[in-house]
Length: 512
Ligand code: GAP
Image (cartoon, rainbow, N blue to C red; front, side, top):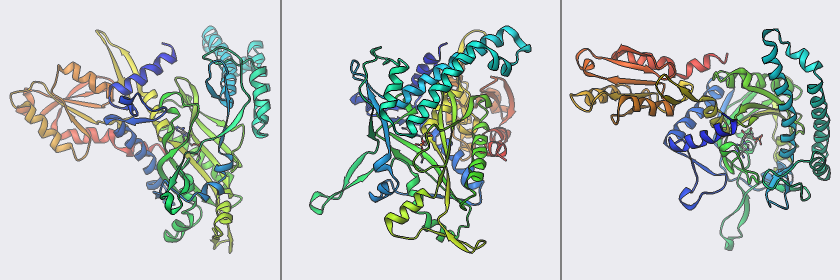
Protein backbone atom coordinates (compact mmCIF):
# COMPACT_ATOMS: atom_id res chain seq x y z
CA UNK A 1 0.00 0.00 0.00
CA UNK A 2 1.25 3.49 -0.85
CA UNK A 3 2.59 5.38 2.17
CA UNK A 4 0.11 8.19 1.49
CA UNK A 5 -2.79 5.74 1.77
CA UNK A 6 -1.42 4.37 5.03
CA UNK A 7 -1.29 7.91 6.39
CA UNK A 8 -4.91 8.58 5.39
CA UNK A 9 -5.92 5.37 7.12
CA UNK A 10 -4.05 6.41 10.26
CA UNK A 11 -5.89 9.71 10.39
CA UNK A 12 -9.25 7.97 9.90
CA UNK A 13 -8.36 5.37 12.53
CA UNK A 14 -7.44 8.08 15.06
CA UNK A 15 -10.88 9.62 14.59
CA UNK A 16 -12.90 6.39 14.51
CA UNK A 17 -11.46 5.09 17.77
CA UNK A 18 -11.49 8.31 19.79
CA UNK A 19 -7.82 9.25 19.61
CA UNK A 20 -7.83 12.58 17.74
CA UNK A 21 -10.66 14.83 16.52
CA UNK A 22 -10.53 17.97 14.41
CA UNK A 23 -11.09 20.95 16.72
CA UNK A 24 -14.52 22.64 16.45
CA UNK A 25 -15.61 19.97 14.00
CA UNK A 26 -19.34 20.80 14.18
CA UNK A 27 -18.39 24.30 12.97
CA UNK A 28 -16.37 22.82 10.09
CA UNK A 29 -13.14 22.78 12.06
CA UNK A 30 -10.32 25.17 12.83
CA UNK A 31 -7.18 24.81 10.73
CA UNK A 32 -4.30 22.86 12.27
CA UNK A 33 -5.93 22.62 15.70
CA UNK A 34 -6.92 19.22 17.10
CA UNK A 35 -8.57 17.72 20.17
CA UNK A 36 -7.62 14.44 21.83
CA UNK A 37 -10.47 12.04 22.53
CA UNK A 38 -10.98 9.45 25.23
CA UNK A 39 -8.23 7.15 23.97
CA UNK A 40 -5.95 9.92 22.73
CA UNK A 41 -5.74 11.66 26.08
CA UNK A 42 -4.69 8.41 27.80
CA UNK A 43 -1.99 7.72 25.20
CA UNK A 44 -0.81 11.32 25.38
CA UNK A 45 -0.62 11.21 29.18
CA UNK A 46 1.40 7.99 29.00
CA UNK A 47 3.85 9.53 26.52
CA UNK A 48 4.25 12.51 28.84
CA UNK A 49 4.81 10.20 31.81
CA UNK A 50 7.47 8.27 29.88
CA UNK A 51 9.28 11.53 29.14
CA UNK A 52 8.79 13.19 32.53
CA UNK A 53 9.86 10.21 34.61
CA UNK A 54 12.84 9.51 32.36
CA UNK A 55 14.00 13.11 32.92
CA UNK A 56 13.01 13.88 36.48
CA UNK A 57 13.01 10.48 38.21
CA UNK A 58 16.02 9.03 36.43
CA UNK A 59 18.23 12.12 36.72
CA UNK A 60 18.94 13.33 40.23
CA UNK A 61 20.03 16.68 38.85
CA UNK A 62 16.91 17.38 36.74
CA UNK A 63 13.88 18.99 38.39
CA UNK A 64 10.48 20.02 37.04
CA UNK A 65 8.68 23.31 36.48
CA UNK A 66 5.25 24.47 35.35
CA UNK A 67 5.48 28.08 34.22
CA UNK A 68 2.62 30.24 32.92
CA UNK A 69 1.83 30.58 29.22
CA UNK A 70 1.45 34.36 29.53
CA UNK A 71 4.74 36.10 30.20
CA UNK A 72 6.10 39.62 30.23
CA UNK A 73 6.26 40.76 26.58
CA UNK A 74 9.88 41.92 26.93
CA UNK A 75 10.86 38.26 27.33
CA UNK A 76 10.11 37.72 23.65
CA UNK A 77 12.09 40.79 22.66
CA UNK A 78 15.05 39.51 24.73
CA UNK A 79 14.83 35.98 23.36
CA UNK A 80 14.90 37.27 19.77
CA UNK A 81 11.45 35.89 18.90
CA UNK A 82 9.93 39.31 18.14
CA UNK A 83 12.62 40.04 15.56
CA UNK A 84 13.71 36.65 14.32
CA UNK A 85 11.05 33.98 14.81
CA UNK A 86 10.12 33.96 11.16
CA UNK A 87 9.43 31.51 8.37
CA UNK A 88 10.37 32.31 4.77
CA UNK A 89 7.11 32.13 2.81
CA UNK A 90 6.32 31.98 -0.87
CA UNK A 91 2.93 32.01 -2.63
CA UNK A 92 1.95 30.36 -5.86
CA UNK A 93 0.10 33.01 -7.86
CA UNK A 94 -2.11 30.49 -9.67
CA UNK A 95 -3.30 28.27 -6.80
CA UNK A 96 -3.04 31.14 -4.26
CA UNK A 97 -1.49 28.55 -1.92
CA UNK A 98 1.24 29.57 0.51
CA UNK A 99 4.32 27.45 1.19
CA UNK A 100 7.43 27.59 3.30
CA UNK A 101 10.26 28.18 0.85
CA UNK A 102 12.69 26.11 2.95
CA UNK A 103 10.26 23.17 3.06
CA UNK A 104 9.84 23.21 -0.74
CA UNK A 105 13.62 22.98 -1.11
CA UNK A 106 13.94 20.31 1.59
CA UNK A 107 11.32 18.25 -0.25
CA UNK A 108 13.40 18.60 -3.41
CA UNK A 109 16.47 17.36 -1.51
CA UNK A 110 14.33 14.46 -0.28
CA UNK A 111 13.56 13.52 -3.91
CA UNK A 112 17.27 13.13 -4.73
CA UNK A 113 17.68 11.01 -1.62
CA UNK A 114 14.70 8.89 -2.57
CA UNK A 115 16.16 8.27 -6.04
CA UNK A 116 19.46 7.11 -4.51
CA UNK A 117 17.64 4.85 -2.05
CA UNK A 118 15.55 3.32 -4.83
CA UNK A 119 18.71 2.41 -6.79
CA UNK A 120 20.16 0.85 -3.65
CA UNK A 121 16.97 -1.10 -2.93
CA UNK A 122 16.84 -2.44 -6.53
CA UNK A 123 20.47 -3.55 -6.40
CA UNK A 124 20.00 -5.13 -2.98
CA UNK A 125 17.18 -7.23 -4.38
CA UNK A 126 19.28 -8.23 -7.41
CA UNK A 127 22.48 -9.17 -5.56
CA UNK A 128 21.01 -10.56 -2.33
CA UNK A 129 23.47 -11.43 0.44
CA UNK A 130 26.50 -10.55 -1.69
CA UNK A 131 25.44 -6.90 -1.86
CA UNK A 132 27.91 -4.32 -0.53
CA UNK A 133 25.86 -1.16 -0.04
CA UNK A 134 28.74 1.16 0.72
CA UNK A 135 30.66 0.11 -2.39
CA UNK A 136 27.52 0.45 -4.51
CA UNK A 137 26.86 3.96 -3.21
CA UNK A 138 30.46 4.96 -3.94
CA UNK A 139 30.58 3.60 -7.49
CA UNK A 140 27.14 3.38 -9.12
CA UNK A 141 26.91 6.20 -11.74
CA UNK A 142 23.18 6.90 -11.19
CA UNK A 143 23.64 7.11 -7.42
CA UNK A 144 26.69 9.34 -7.86
CA UNK A 145 24.86 11.67 -10.27
CA UNK A 146 22.02 12.13 -7.77
CA UNK A 147 24.48 12.53 -4.92
CA UNK A 148 26.21 15.33 -6.78
CA UNK A 149 22.88 17.09 -7.40
CA UNK A 150 22.00 16.63 -3.72
CA UNK A 151 25.31 17.98 -2.45
CA UNK A 152 25.27 21.02 -4.75
CA UNK A 153 21.71 21.93 -3.83
CA UNK A 154 22.37 21.29 -0.15
CA UNK A 155 25.39 23.62 -0.09
CA UNK A 156 23.55 26.39 -1.94
CA UNK A 157 20.47 26.05 0.28
CA UNK A 158 22.49 26.08 3.53
CA UNK A 159 24.32 29.22 2.42
CA UNK A 160 21.08 31.00 1.47
CA UNK A 161 19.53 30.14 4.85
CA UNK A 162 22.59 31.21 6.80
CA UNK A 163 22.76 34.51 4.90
CA UNK A 164 18.95 34.94 5.25
CA UNK A 165 19.07 35.55 1.51
CA UNK A 166 15.42 35.48 0.45
CA UNK A 167 16.13 36.27 -3.25
CA UNK A 168 18.48 33.31 -3.42
CA UNK A 169 15.84 31.00 -1.87
CA UNK A 170 13.44 32.06 -4.62
CA UNK A 171 16.12 31.59 -7.27
CA UNK A 172 16.77 28.04 -6.01
CA UNK A 173 13.05 27.25 -6.31
CA UNK A 174 13.08 28.57 -9.88
CA UNK A 175 16.34 26.86 -10.88
CA UNK A 176 15.18 23.53 -9.46
CA UNK A 177 11.93 23.91 -11.42
CA UNK A 178 9.88 23.26 -8.28
CA UNK A 179 6.18 23.37 -9.08
CA UNK A 180 3.16 24.05 -6.87
CA UNK A 181 1.62 20.65 -6.03
CA UNK A 182 -1.89 22.13 -6.51
CA UNK A 183 -1.62 24.23 -9.70
CA UNK A 184 1.44 22.49 -11.15
CA UNK A 185 2.79 25.94 -12.11
CA UNK A 186 6.06 27.77 -11.38
CA UNK A 187 4.39 31.14 -11.05
CA UNK A 188 5.89 32.16 -7.68
CA UNK A 189 5.83 35.40 -5.67
CA UNK A 190 8.95 36.69 -3.93
CA UNK A 191 9.94 35.02 -0.65
CA UNK A 192 9.21 37.08 2.48
CA UNK A 193 9.51 36.61 6.22
CA UNK A 194 6.48 35.98 8.42
CA UNK A 195 6.51 36.10 12.25
CA UNK A 196 4.95 33.03 13.84
CA UNK A 197 3.89 34.39 17.22
CA UNK A 198 0.24 34.84 18.20
CA UNK A 199 -0.51 37.95 20.23
CA UNK A 200 -3.36 39.08 22.43
CA UNK A 201 -4.17 41.94 24.79
CA UNK A 202 -3.89 41.80 28.57
CA UNK A 203 -5.93 44.15 30.77
CA UNK A 204 -8.80 46.43 29.77
CA UNK A 205 -8.24 49.26 27.32
CA UNK A 206 -9.17 51.80 30.00
CA UNK A 207 -6.21 50.58 32.11
CA UNK A 208 -3.97 50.69 29.08
CA UNK A 209 -3.97 47.12 27.76
CA UNK A 210 -0.63 45.71 26.75
CA UNK A 211 0.15 43.39 23.89
CA UNK A 212 1.36 40.00 25.07
CA UNK A 213 2.27 36.83 23.19
CA UNK A 214 1.19 33.24 23.46
CA UNK A 215 4.50 31.47 24.08
CA UNK A 216 5.94 29.86 20.93
CA UNK A 217 8.18 27.61 23.08
CA UNK A 218 8.07 26.59 26.73
CA UNK A 219 11.83 27.13 27.10
CA UNK A 220 11.67 30.83 27.98
CA UNK A 221 9.58 30.03 31.07
CA UNK A 222 12.50 27.89 32.21
CA UNK A 223 15.12 30.55 31.49
CA UNK A 224 13.32 33.28 33.40
CA UNK A 225 12.92 30.91 36.38
CA UNK A 226 16.54 29.74 36.31
CA UNK A 227 17.52 31.77 39.40
CA UNK A 228 14.37 30.84 41.35
CA UNK A 229 14.93 27.12 40.85
CA UNK A 230 18.70 27.20 41.27
CA UNK A 231 18.47 29.12 44.54
CA UNK A 232 15.41 27.47 46.15
CA UNK A 233 16.45 23.99 45.01
CA UNK A 234 20.12 24.62 45.94
CA UNK A 235 20.99 23.21 42.54
CA UNK A 236 24.62 22.75 41.57
CA UNK A 237 25.75 23.02 38.00
CA UNK A 238 25.36 20.89 35.91
CA UNK A 239 21.60 20.62 36.45
CA UNK A 240 18.43 20.63 34.37
CA UNK A 241 14.88 22.00 34.51
CA UNK A 242 12.18 20.06 32.68
CA UNK A 243 8.77 21.33 31.65
CA UNK A 244 5.76 20.08 29.68
CA UNK A 245 3.31 22.62 28.34
CA UNK A 246 1.42 24.20 25.50
CA UNK A 247 3.09 26.29 22.81
CA UNK A 248 1.50 28.27 19.99
CA UNK A 249 2.73 29.11 16.50
CA UNK A 250 0.83 30.68 13.67
CA UNK A 251 2.06 28.03 11.24
CA UNK A 252 1.24 29.07 7.73
CA UNK A 253 1.85 25.76 6.13
CA UNK A 254 0.03 23.49 8.51
CA UNK A 255 -0.11 20.03 7.01
CA UNK A 256 0.08 16.40 7.93
CA UNK A 257 -2.48 16.17 10.68
CA UNK A 258 -0.97 16.64 14.16
CA UNK A 259 2.57 16.87 12.77
CA UNK A 260 2.39 20.65 12.45
CA UNK A 261 -0.22 22.37 14.59
CA UNK A 262 -0.96 25.92 15.67
CA UNK A 263 -1.55 24.88 19.29
CA UNK A 264 0.66 22.03 20.44
CA UNK A 265 2.52 20.70 23.42
CA UNK A 266 6.24 20.56 24.08
CA UNK A 267 8.39 18.59 26.50
CA UNK A 268 11.53 20.65 27.01
CA UNK A 269 14.55 20.36 29.26
CA UNK A 270 17.22 23.03 29.69
CA UNK A 271 20.48 21.69 31.09
CA UNK A 272 22.69 24.39 32.64
CA UNK A 273 26.41 23.71 32.36
CA UNK A 274 29.82 25.29 32.86
CA UNK A 275 30.92 27.31 29.78
CA UNK A 276 33.25 25.27 27.60
CA UNK A 277 31.64 21.94 28.56
CA UNK A 278 28.49 22.45 26.50
CA UNK A 279 29.50 20.39 23.49
CA UNK A 280 30.32 17.37 25.67
CA UNK A 281 26.90 17.67 27.30
CA UNK A 282 25.31 18.17 23.89
CA UNK A 283 26.75 14.80 22.81
CA UNK A 284 25.69 13.12 26.05
CA UNK A 285 22.12 14.34 25.68
CA UNK A 286 22.10 13.23 22.04
CA UNK A 287 22.92 9.69 23.22
CA UNK A 288 20.42 9.81 26.07
CA UNK A 289 17.59 11.01 23.88
CA UNK A 290 18.12 8.59 21.00
CA UNK A 291 18.20 5.73 23.55
CA UNK A 292 14.84 6.97 24.90
CA UNK A 293 13.32 6.78 21.41
CA UNK A 294 14.86 3.42 20.57
CA UNK A 295 13.72 1.81 23.83
CA UNK A 296 10.17 1.85 22.43
CA UNK A 297 11.22 -0.85 19.98
CA UNK A 298 10.07 0.74 16.72
CA UNK A 299 13.28 -0.26 14.90
CA UNK A 300 16.63 1.53 15.17
CA UNK A 301 16.74 1.93 11.39
CA UNK A 302 13.72 4.24 11.57
CA UNK A 303 15.64 6.95 13.41
CA UNK A 304 18.40 9.22 12.26
CA UNK A 305 20.09 12.45 13.29
CA UNK A 306 19.82 15.46 11.01
CA UNK A 307 22.37 18.26 11.40
CA UNK A 308 20.83 21.71 10.95
CA UNK A 309 21.56 23.60 7.69
CA UNK A 310 21.17 26.84 9.57
CA UNK A 311 21.79 27.26 13.27
CA UNK A 312 19.08 29.18 15.15
CA UNK A 313 20.11 32.61 16.37
CA UNK A 314 20.90 31.16 19.82
CA UNK A 315 22.74 27.91 19.00
CA UNK A 316 26.35 26.76 18.51
CA UNK A 317 25.33 23.17 17.71
CA UNK A 318 21.98 21.64 16.81
CA UNK A 319 20.67 18.32 15.68
CA UNK A 320 17.20 16.87 15.06
CA UNK A 321 16.09 13.36 15.89
CA UNK A 322 14.14 12.29 12.83
CA UNK A 323 11.70 9.39 12.58
CA UNK A 324 10.63 7.68 9.38
CA UNK A 325 6.96 8.69 9.15
CA UNK A 326 4.78 7.40 6.28
CA UNK A 327 5.63 10.74 4.58
CA UNK A 328 9.39 10.34 5.05
CA UNK A 329 12.03 11.10 7.69
CA UNK A 330 10.87 14.13 9.70
CA UNK A 331 11.90 15.90 12.89
CA UNK A 332 10.45 14.70 16.18
CA UNK A 333 12.89 16.30 18.57
CA UNK A 334 15.50 19.04 18.54
CA UNK A 335 18.68 19.01 20.64
CA UNK A 336 20.37 22.39 20.79
CA UNK A 337 23.43 23.84 22.41
CA UNK A 338 22.00 27.31 23.12
CA UNK A 339 25.20 28.81 24.57
CA UNK A 340 24.60 31.56 27.17
CA UNK A 341 22.46 33.47 24.69
CA UNK A 342 19.10 33.35 26.48
CA UNK A 343 20.33 33.98 30.04
CA UNK A 344 22.62 36.80 28.87
CA UNK A 345 19.78 38.42 26.94
CA UNK A 346 17.51 38.23 30.00
CA UNK A 347 20.29 39.75 32.11
CA UNK A 348 20.53 42.63 29.70
CA UNK A 349 16.80 43.25 29.25
CA UNK A 350 15.78 42.73 32.90
CA UNK A 351 18.79 44.46 34.41
CA UNK A 352 19.09 41.56 36.93
CA UNK A 353 22.22 39.44 37.35
CA UNK A 354 21.59 35.86 36.22
CA UNK A 355 24.75 34.08 37.28
CA UNK A 356 26.03 30.97 38.98
CA UNK A 357 28.78 31.05 41.56
CA UNK A 358 30.90 27.99 40.87
CA UNK A 359 32.56 26.98 44.15
CA UNK A 360 35.05 24.73 42.37
CA UNK A 361 36.29 27.53 40.11
CA UNK A 362 35.63 30.23 42.70
CA UNK A 363 34.04 32.43 40.02
CA UNK A 364 30.63 33.53 38.75
CA UNK A 365 29.45 33.04 35.21
CA UNK A 366 26.35 32.92 33.03
CA UNK A 367 25.73 29.19 32.55
CA UNK A 368 25.63 27.64 29.09
CA UNK A 369 22.57 25.63 28.14
CA UNK A 370 21.93 22.39 26.31
CA UNK A 371 18.27 21.92 25.42
CA UNK A 372 16.26 18.87 24.48
CA UNK A 373 12.88 19.74 22.97
CA UNK A 374 10.29 17.28 21.75
CA UNK A 375 6.70 17.81 20.61
CA UNK A 376 4.17 15.65 22.46
CA UNK A 377 1.86 15.62 19.43
CA UNK A 378 4.60 14.66 17.01
CA UNK A 379 5.67 11.91 19.38
CA UNK A 380 2.03 10.79 19.53
CA UNK A 381 1.92 10.63 15.73
CA UNK A 382 5.18 8.70 15.68
CA UNK A 383 3.89 6.17 18.21
CA UNK A 384 0.61 5.64 16.35
CA UNK A 385 2.31 5.44 12.93
CA UNK A 386 4.86 2.92 14.22
CA UNK A 387 2.21 0.81 15.94
CA UNK A 388 -0.48 0.70 13.24
CA UNK A 389 -0.66 -2.71 11.53
CA UNK A 390 -3.11 -4.31 9.15
CA UNK A 391 -2.85 -8.07 9.43
CA UNK A 392 -4.28 -10.70 7.16
CA UNK A 393 -5.43 -13.65 9.25
CA UNK A 394 -6.56 -17.12 8.12
CA UNK A 395 -10.24 -16.23 7.87
CA UNK A 396 -10.37 -12.47 8.10
CA UNK A 397 -8.15 -9.49 8.79
CA UNK A 398 -7.57 -7.15 11.70
CA UNK A 399 -6.24 -3.67 12.39
CA UNK A 400 -4.09 -3.68 15.47
CA UNK A 401 -2.19 -0.92 17.24
CA UNK A 402 0.92 -2.66 18.54
CA UNK A 403 1.57 0.05 21.10
CA UNK A 404 4.34 -0.49 23.64
CA UNK A 405 2.28 -1.88 26.57
CA UNK A 406 3.16 0.93 29.05
CA UNK A 407 1.80 3.50 26.59
CA UNK A 408 -1.47 1.72 25.77
CA UNK A 409 -4.58 3.72 26.80
CA UNK A 410 -6.32 0.62 28.17
CA UNK A 411 -4.14 -2.12 29.65
CA UNK A 412 -6.78 -4.76 30.23
CA UNK A 413 -10.23 -5.49 28.81
CA UNK A 414 -12.41 -7.82 30.84
CA UNK A 415 -15.04 -9.61 28.77
CA UNK A 416 -17.77 -11.86 30.19
CA UNK A 417 -18.53 -14.60 27.66
CA UNK A 418 -22.27 -14.08 28.14
CA UNK A 419 -24.37 -11.45 29.88
CA UNK A 420 -25.85 -13.88 32.43
CA UNK A 421 -25.06 -16.71 34.87
CA UNK A 422 -23.08 -14.38 37.12
CA UNK A 423 -20.33 -13.82 34.53
CA UNK A 424 -20.75 -10.00 34.36
CA UNK A 425 -20.52 -9.88 38.16
CA UNK A 426 -17.35 -12.00 38.12
CA UNK A 427 -15.87 -9.71 35.43
CA UNK A 428 -16.68 -6.64 37.55
CA UNK A 429 -14.99 -8.29 40.52
CA UNK A 430 -11.80 -8.69 38.49
CA UNK A 431 -11.92 -5.06 37.39
CA UNK A 432 -12.51 -3.91 40.98
CA UNK A 433 -9.43 -5.82 42.12
CA UNK A 434 -7.18 -4.35 39.41
CA UNK A 435 -8.54 -0.90 38.60
CA UNK A 436 -6.24 0.95 40.99
CA UNK A 437 -3.22 -0.54 39.22
CA UNK A 438 -4.23 -0.52 35.56
CA UNK A 439 -6.67 1.23 33.27
CA UNK A 440 -9.28 -1.53 32.73
CA UNK A 441 -12.30 -1.62 30.45
CA UNK A 442 -15.42 -3.74 30.77
CA UNK A 443 -17.11 -4.83 27.54
CA UNK A 444 -20.04 -7.24 27.20
CA UNK A 445 -21.47 -6.15 23.83
CA UNK A 446 -21.22 -8.31 20.66
CA UNK A 447 -19.39 -11.57 20.10
CA UNK A 448 -16.02 -12.20 21.76
CA UNK A 449 -14.35 -11.98 18.33
CA UNK A 450 -15.75 -8.49 17.70
CA UNK A 451 -14.75 -7.39 21.18
CA UNK A 452 -11.18 -8.61 20.59
CA UNK A 453 -11.05 -6.60 17.34
CA UNK A 454 -12.22 -3.43 19.10
CA UNK A 455 -9.51 -3.85 21.72
CA UNK A 456 -6.87 -4.61 19.04
CA UNK A 457 -7.81 -1.37 17.29
CA UNK A 458 -7.11 0.71 20.39
CA UNK A 459 -3.98 -1.23 21.28
CA UNK A 460 -5.11 -3.02 24.48
CA UNK A 461 -2.32 -5.51 25.25
CA UNK A 462 -4.45 -7.93 27.32
CA UNK A 463 -8.01 -9.23 27.07
CA UNK A 464 -9.41 -11.51 29.73
CA UNK A 465 -12.47 -13.64 29.05
CA UNK A 466 -14.64 -14.74 31.94
CA UNK A 467 -16.55 -17.97 31.27
CA UNK A 468 -18.51 -20.55 33.25
CA UNK A 469 -15.34 -22.27 34.41
CA UNK A 470 -14.18 -18.98 35.96
CA UNK A 471 -17.01 -19.12 38.49
CA UNK A 472 -15.95 -22.63 39.48
CA UNK A 473 -12.17 -22.43 39.68
CA UNK A 474 -11.28 -18.71 39.59
CA UNK A 475 -9.38 -18.96 36.31
CA UNK A 476 -9.83 -16.95 33.10
CA UNK A 477 -8.55 -16.99 29.55
CA UNK A 478 -5.98 -14.30 28.88
CA UNK A 479 -5.40 -13.29 25.27
CA UNK A 480 -2.25 -11.49 24.15
CA UNK A 481 -2.79 -8.73 21.58
CA UNK A 482 0.24 -9.23 19.33
CA UNK A 483 0.40 -13.02 19.14
CA UNK A 484 -3.35 -13.57 19.73
CA UNK A 485 -2.28 -16.56 21.83
CA UNK A 486 -4.61 -17.51 24.66
CA UNK A 487 -3.95 -19.31 27.90
CA UNK A 488 -5.78 -20.24 31.05
CA UNK A 489 -4.49 -18.47 34.15
CA UNK A 490 -5.56 -17.95 37.74
CA UNK A 491 -7.35 -14.65 38.38
CA UNK A 492 -4.95 -14.10 41.28
CA UNK A 493 -2.00 -14.16 38.81
CA UNK A 494 -3.40 -11.44 36.52
CA UNK A 495 -1.86 -8.56 38.45
CA UNK A 496 1.64 -10.01 38.09
CA UNK A 497 1.28 -11.05 34.44
CA UNK A 498 -0.04 -7.66 33.35
CA UNK A 499 2.04 -5.60 35.75
CA UNK A 500 5.25 -7.11 34.41
CA UNK A 501 4.47 -5.90 30.90
CA UNK A 502 2.78 -2.54 31.35
CA UNK A 503 5.13 -1.16 33.97
CA UNK A 504 7.38 1.71 32.83
CA UNK A 505 10.27 0.04 34.65
CA UNK A 506 10.83 -2.25 31.67
CA UNK A 507 11.29 0.75 29.38
CA UNK A 508 13.46 2.60 31.85
CA UNK A 509 15.65 -0.49 32.24
CA UNK A 510 16.62 -0.11 28.57
CA UNK A 511 17.81 3.45 29.08
CA UNK A 512 20.80 2.73 31.30
N1 GAP B 1 12.76 25.44 22.33
C1 GAP B 1 13.24 24.98 21.09
C2 GAP B 1 12.19 24.74 20.13
O1 GAP B 1 11.05 25.09 20.33
P1 GAP B 1 11.72 23.66 17.79
O2 GAP B 1 12.61 22.79 16.96
O3 GAP B 1 11.12 24.86 17.16
O4 GAP B 1 12.62 24.07 19.04
C3 GAP B 1 10.85 21.64 19.18
O5 GAP B 1 10.56 22.77 18.40
C4 GAP B 1 9.89 20.52 18.89
O6 GAP B 1 8.54 20.97 19.05
C5 GAP B 1 9.96 19.99 17.45
O7 GAP B 1 10.98 19.03 17.31
C6 GAP B 1 8.57 19.38 17.29
O8 GAP B 1 8.52 18.08 17.83
C7 GAP B 1 7.70 20.29 18.13
N2 GAP B 1 7.01 21.28 17.28
C8 GAP B 1 7.50 22.45 16.81
N3 GAP B 1 6.57 23.09 16.08
C9 GAP B 1 5.47 22.30 16.08
C10 GAP B 1 4.17 22.42 15.51
N4 GAP B 1 3.81 23.49 14.81
N5 GAP B 1 3.29 21.41 15.71
C11 GAP B 1 3.63 20.32 16.45
N6 GAP B 1 4.84 20.18 17.02
C12 GAP B 1 5.75 21.14 16.85
